[in-house]
Length: 78
Image (cartoon, rainbow, N blue to C red; front, side, top):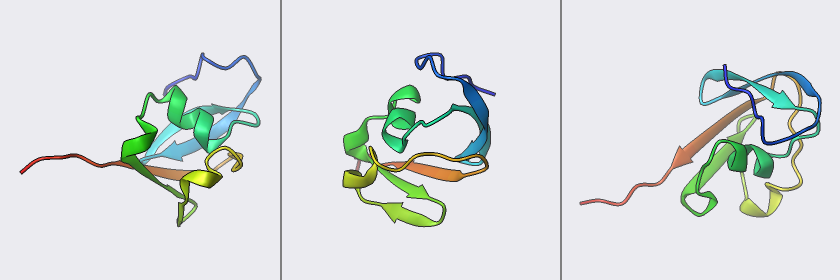
């Protein structure tokens, strides 16, 4: 289980990110989660509770206890 030490707010409970349980910080947004997990926000898509989030919502959507988040990274190649 990963702790998000970057943030100094109270740890609340658990969420599922890509099928794994993670502790999250109270009032953490999707945007803060992306930063804490060190994803490049330009090359990802986020599904939150079964729906794809537009990038414009990353900073507004606040994570709640038991939420499910899927983060998909786009890769180049040939």
